[in-house]
View 1 (tube, helix red, strand yellow):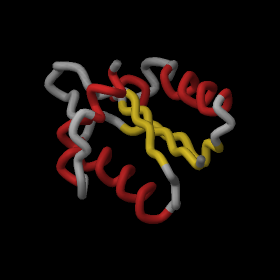
View 2: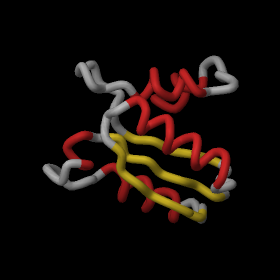
View 3: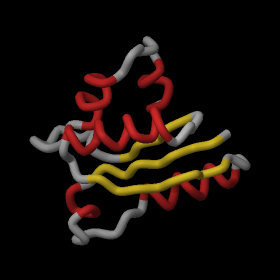
View 4: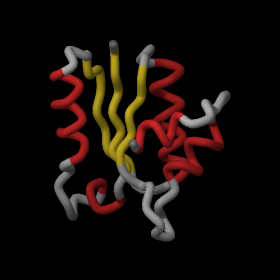
Length: 100
């Protein structure tokens, strides 16, 4: 499986904090023998989140895009809304299963 990883965080993108979740996802993917084709960090900005997802989905021919961050209740945490806005299809129950 070919995987792309996006870490979504203002503080990581701004160099104020080190990314822990991206490397953890990469390690887990490698444990599963999945190919990580790219890993990137974007700030908590809906337009930048959407652009990164669209580019990966349309041009990089990945099987799965894994994202981390931007899912809290802070005013700039907008990953779910940004993702939903560009999704062609939502799979009921998938988000709950991932959290479980």
